[in-house]
Amino acid sequence: MTTKMPVLFVGHGSPMNAIEDNEFSRAWETTGESLPRPKAILTISAHWETSGTKVTAMEKPKTIYDFYGFPKELYEVTYPAPGSPDLVQTVRKVIKLTEIQPDMTWGLDHGTWSVLHRMFPKADLPVVQMSLDRSQGPQYHYQLGQQLKELREEGVLIVSSGNIVHNLRMTVFDDNLKFDWAEAFDAKVRQWILSNDHDPLIEYEKQGREAELAINSAEHYLPLLYTLGVKDEGDPVSFFADKVTYGAISMRSVKIG
Image 1 (cartoon, rainbow, N blue to C red):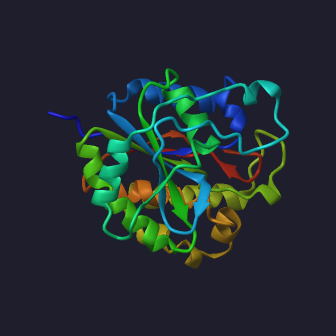
Image 2: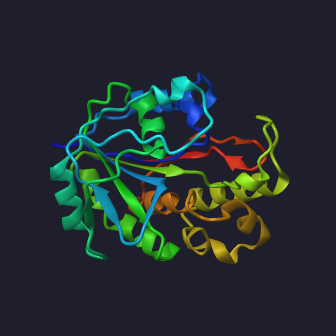
């Protein structure tokens, strides 16, 4: 019998969380240690935006340093996890909403490897990353998540990575600062998730000024909808990080199942 896998949304924040010892990296490490060992991992990262939905299909996905201006030691981190042609085929089979396109050029960006580096430091599990089709609205992303449900029964860990509140234009480099609107929207999202009320989360554009400021360009928010879409009725929900930092970044991370 294969253990039904939980599903994660990780507020990944700064790439520095990959190498710093802080409350977020420790929470990721603890969560990784607590999970059943998956057969493979499917990730959805804020940092791969495409037209159409794609999956990494190479046998050895490269580590992508999609940032600049950070210390040298961050660029020395590699995450040499193998790919999984089998998982690529399974994803293409279970998703009926669209045709999933195999991709041989991308790799694992920091939305994926900075998190997995702490959760699964041995990099010995197959990893496939799926892109965000930015030509589509939030309902599409939620429905795509729903179609991934059966992967949980096959031992696949689904990890989406972004930030519920993510407004770089308003960030302030003070770890303990949180704007009222950011904290208020993060709290609303927490309550909607706990009450299994997904409609306002999907229809975030109707949620007023707080949502407009928090979600901003949306690429960091949309991965959350995949995690919520995969949720089964009765799945327990918990949070393994919940801090608003730098004024306008929510590090809230969600575990379902």
